Structure formats: structure tokens, C-alpha cells
Length: 306
Image (tube, rainbow, N blue to C red):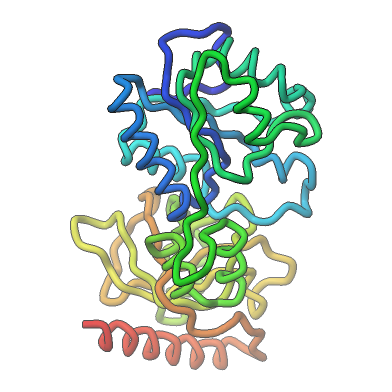
């Protein structure tokens, strides 16, 4: 897959295009990508995605914007897995936000992306002040066709990024997994920490987070990136209130039966079951007892699934 940072100066080869933020690439997004691939094949056009970074809500709301479900890298990896040939990552800034809907169609979709077929969601809004919608797009579609993707419902609930954030915040990983079509994951590289976990008898792989995640607490997890097989473990995701005050969020993973040096390795951590919320303990002895109980509970979780 070719990734373009920004929009090309002028149109090249015509494309079949879908547009969206695709945060989390959940089951609604997956349906859009599947439909894109079908249309691109039928029309003999390259399959392309137009997405935005940062998320428009981050541009408008700043620190008040909801947490992301996925990094840009994770989104791109999922696009590539579907067979998307081109992804255009447009920087969402004041200039892009200020383009009127009609100019967005003329100058971006037609003039710079050469869209011949466009797929959007039924509630798609675009252009300055969100002034354009599906009807606007269809009315102006002289050189391309437009298709709307219907809402995807899972067990009667609309698959949406907002619903997934809500499920994660509530610790309902089963619901989040159903809406995502896979377990919620966080990926990152292992870095050196304070080695406190090793001192307590539970050495952890520490993965720093660039942004505050949509979930926190103690979890049973499955880890990819340490060979062909996955490894089970227990993870702490949060600010570690017993050992730090005002700390940045950190993902710490204790892997069962594993004690190798893996600094610099990139891991993907799947969150399968929430054990409890973070809590403050009076001393390290109390914390150690709780960690021991967490490990036992996580092992019971995996044993029940075997």
C-alpha cells in the first residue's frame, strides 16, 4: 500500500475512494472497506482511502476530544490488510477545515484525487462548518458516482467509535470486542522502567503511551510479538497511584512464565478481560499481595478458556 502524507498537487490515476476517520477500524468501517474492495475490483480502479490526522475532533476540541481507539499506524496496517492500494492522510488543520463543501468536491475529490466512485457513511458531513452532506455530494457528482454505506448493527447496537469508547470506559471488553470485531489492542515498544516489578517478583514489559487511552485498570491480556505463539499475561494500564503521583499513563505487562530481555521489541497487547480498576495501596507489601491475586485471577480466566 502506498501512503501519501497530504493530498497530491494534481489528479493522477482515477480511483475508487472511501472517506472517513476510521478510528478503531471497527465492524462498520470493515464493512466499508469490504465494499470498497468489491467496487474497485468491479470498476478496475485502485482502491483508495482518504483519512485525516489529527482527528477533526482533536482539532476542534483539543484536550477535550475523546481518546483515540487506534494510532495512525494501526489504521494503516488494517487498510493494507484489506488490500487498499493507496491511503491519503490529509492533515486536518484550519486550512482544510475552512474549505467549503463545493470546493472540497471540486478541488479535492475531483481535482486532486481523481475520484470516480465514492463511498461514504449515511451520516457523512464535510466542508466548512460541516455544511456538506450526502445529498450535497450526490448533487455535485458529475464525474463520479456516490454510494452510501448503511449503518452496521451488532446485537442491535450501532457499530461506532463512540459506542466502543463507552464500552471500554465501562470495562465491558466483551461488548467492545463485538463492536470492533476483534479484541481492543495497544501496540508499542518496550522501554526500560524503574525495575520495581522485578523487585516485587513480577518483572514487566513497560510500554509508554503517547496519548491517554480510552481504558484503564488491570486486565487479562494476550501478547503478540514474541515469536510465532502468543503469550498470556496480566497488564496494568494507568498512572500507578501507589508508586507515582501525577504520572503519565503507562502499560505494564507481566507475562506468565517469561523472563527474557525484550527492550526495544514491538509488542501488541490484546485486552481480553478486565479484572479491576486501579487502586492506591498503603505500601508495597499490600501492592504485592494484590498483584499476586491479580495474576491468579488472570490465570483462572485463561484456564477457563482452554
